Length: 474
Image (cartoon, rainbow, N blue to C red; front, side):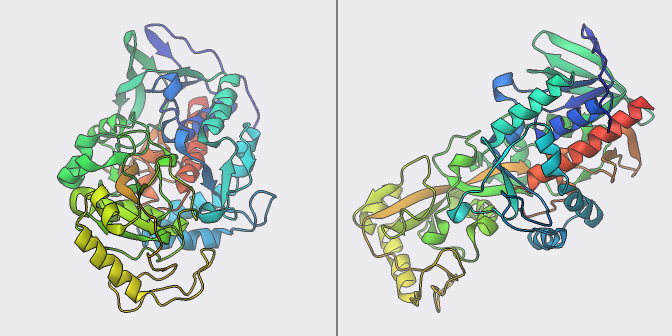
């Protein structure tokens, strides 16, 4: 694709541009860069202030990409077929197969594309966070990646307006004709010939979460940006665009219960679950903590905790395991006896003692090895612990509280293979596209694979950017 300088954007009370993009994260910037390189003038409106720009991309660390051979950072091949098997397993087949396969195929292009935009990668981490074969880790994390994309976009002439929210879109016979945005100085009209929605999901809108989850949603913590309130998603649904996905489906992990209500980010995740047991507020275990490697199971624990009384759980470990995982930003509760620890976390000591005693008695021994599916398991216990089961018997004892941490929601707008949004009658809007979380539900009907949110955002950001700029140039 040849580079063409984009024309200036006229900004006054009425803003004129070729392409308007709502959102300021990875998907929006991939779309903006692609459209600008294709010769379009591009305006990005980001609801957050500059210091908070980038949506949930601010908190990401890596991206899952298919590749046929190692490249020095990715430690081995990860073919599309294996990627598909992983996705099919976690979604249980609840995915648009054609869009999903296209996403995985095009993920092979992302390494080179992002590198060309100034994004750099680092060797993967070890221990329980090892994804070195399947996922590319960003050097400096998500904010560093964002800074590179913003710098490239601005060098290409993309204009970014911060503290600016899309409040309405104008359409004539299915065609986008313009929009209204709210800036710090009041509302402005945007005249544009193409539009990309890349404004995230509704996970920061607790009232909307409560519509789907009931009162339990009030106890959820939001790992990501507080600016993803779903206002653009709601606007588009009200305009007659077809929704896709279940409003209860989302990427939800169990995070430290002491994390802030919003924007706690990746550091609030706890990776100690496989090394101990998890009890609920009644002191009872409720799931197999050693079912599989943590990177393959961490995404189900948010929902598991959400289903427990008061939406809370507690990881109990002993001194054998305290140094076996990446520590939380918050220190664990600590006590010399299980009784004292139970009183500290507010769970009935007698019930905790009963649960731990039953677990300890069911452990079969074996050789502990967190790098493989070892033979340390339980027998005759419900729920079982399939691997890494060692008695909790060596003081001091430790506890972390768990809460459901919502990263992003899956309810979105249905799209076609060109990234065009589909109306309720199934017809595509010729010059209206979607990318990122706002359309991720086409791929993620349920479940999650580490790093695939970034994959979907980049793939469809590029598709949307190319589609919208090709439309406006023609």
